[in-house]
Image 1: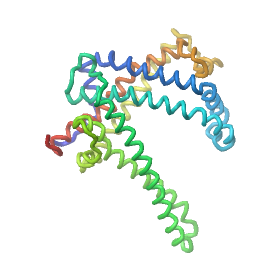
Image 2: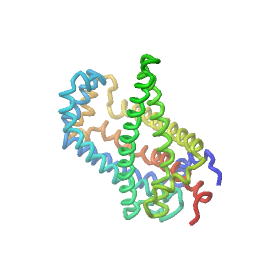
Image 3: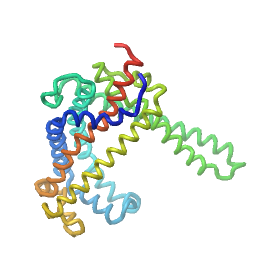
Image 4: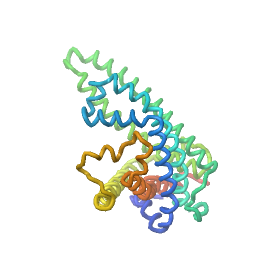
Length: 307
């Protein structure tokens, strides 16, 4: 079956046909935000705000100009981010499978396709395995570039003078192209594993063969739509928060409003309002991103696999 650009708009379709999904998915994603924020505040809230203050004062130069202080703070913040990431992965797997069920037309939609079982656990495992795979590939690929670069620099230094800069630029382009290719070719691993109810890392390469550019274009369109939705929601939030929640965009109390060093900050009307807005926005963003992937798989599956 031919792959058309329609798959990029699948998220809008499922939300338009079943708007009630937002009512089920939003609380799950809001709970994920609250728990993740609470973990960050309890584990390293003051340190996180100290890093934010350093970035506001020194910019990205803080990493080099204040390396010791930054490293000390980062050591305390990193475990908090790690714990928050695990929480997000848990809740994301629930919504991920719900989107797959909505697109593929499987399961009961009485509770917004929400469940927690083997499918969700399988997606968590796949996420970990893909992260490990990406880490290993990045190390191997980087080592390969260093070796090739060293050989080329040694061979051409006498005739080219300073080839290192040229090779650095070329290697950066090659790296971006390689990782982009890899992401596209592996993009159907989660949804295919969900559909087949088993871990399948090779099937995505077969399904995406000959469809790289269509998938790339579709994913780019999806990302653009996600960015537009995010920007629109931010504008609406600010327009409502300034008159109704007392948000002062240019005020000196902005830092105090979003102070994540204290757990009480989550009860601030502006912070709570922003988290609720994010939770209401998140189902559509999830439907767009995950729905595009699932719709692409649904279109390619008949042409590439037999079940």
